[in-house]
Image 1 (tube, rainbow, N blue to C red):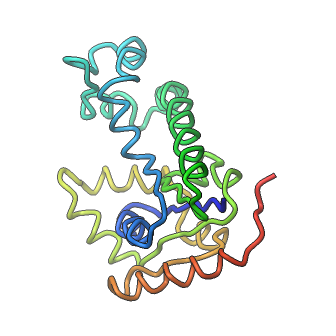
Image 2: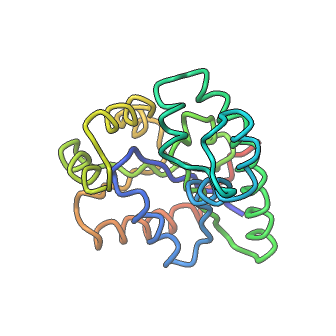
Length: 199
């Protein structure tokens, strides 16, 4: 099975591109969705122990947690040591399942793919990109987005130009849905002929 990594900075159209892969029949592992699920169950007790007062009724309060960790590298590291191993476990389960079902390609949708070294687990990487003005306009469509929040998020991410340089494929999401959809189809045709890269 060929493992594709999908990434892209905030507001670049990564989630929409992931949907196009899913519609093309590719099983998609959404790392963000997994974190959401963990915050409503499995990770809650460990997060409460590390950051008292950030959970209620068995769920993590994302606003309270963000207030404690954003901009604090040590706190962020502490949170990642709780969450990353659980996300990895979930990802391994997903890949085993996709393999068992005979999927030729599986997609790992990971916002911080390069930042966490996740590209090493992939055979090829797809980066979704768009011009900066478009990225900012899209990011501000999100509820609760502020200039400060956006700056902090972008600062945490590998710059777009660097992502594009390290990508095997770049999806330009500024051309509209149809163009992105056809870029996804092209990528799937290309990977069918590519050798696997994982050790």
